[in-house]
Length: 331
Image 1 (cartoon, one colour):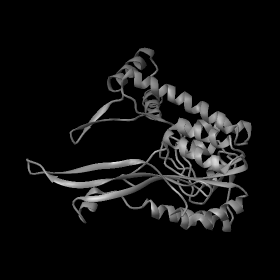
Image 2 (tube, rainbow, N blue to C red):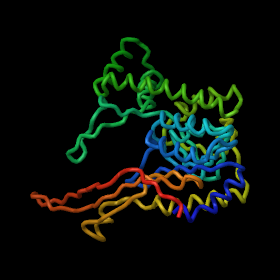
Image 3 (cartoon, rainbow, N blue to C red):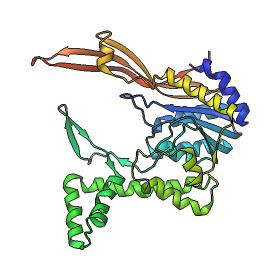
Image 4 (cartoon, rainbow, N blue to C red):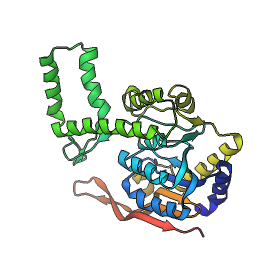
């Protein structure tokens, strides 16, 4: 809980000569949580209590989420400070990487990773697949679409315009044209946002397009991980390596939050129901913390139960009774 981390938060502020804002989203298996626009209101409350200051350090752990929410978060934080830095203890992927591009510098541990920012779209026109009797819309990756078309041109050496047109039309048999249009728009948008944010990052001008191209397409896979050495030496980002004292504090904070949010323990229905049926649960899936503002935590609560079906099979029901942000003051 926050009271157990407050001394380390004070140490971080002292070591960085800044005000600290902590933001975690869960990467717990089966309970993953994305960055969304719902964070802006609680973050604004924390920043109002912190006030206008010279420097803010955002300590972030996330697998990503909404790019526009990330863009808005950077601009919100920057409206309260002159100097903005990001501290990465472990994962800072996708939209979280986009957030880090908007900082003046990135403090990365040896475990810290950035990742590609190529977006996936998930609109109402996206293709659907049937999983266990439910129709689920499938996200469309910008790079998967590009990869399909580039494979036709580069690997299969198809150059005839009519044949290329047929290949594109074949794609529209599986993906609605409006979804493909959304993919193109999303790619253009993420490139524009990345270029704008990198102006704050104080890297060499000639590196801007290289960074944008690599993060948006050239990395080849959305799962690609970028460690500190590559981020600094190959991409030219403004990366700072923490000294031993700072590293120990960063690590201690991460370990404490990791344990609190059970990030290494999958939310496995069968395992949980083996201990009780029904099984009542409460999951802390995201948190925003600061010394001045206390803790805002996104909580999912409910009960799991296993039922026998008429056909002899069993079904698991997840009855979600609460899912929202809660504010917790420092006791």
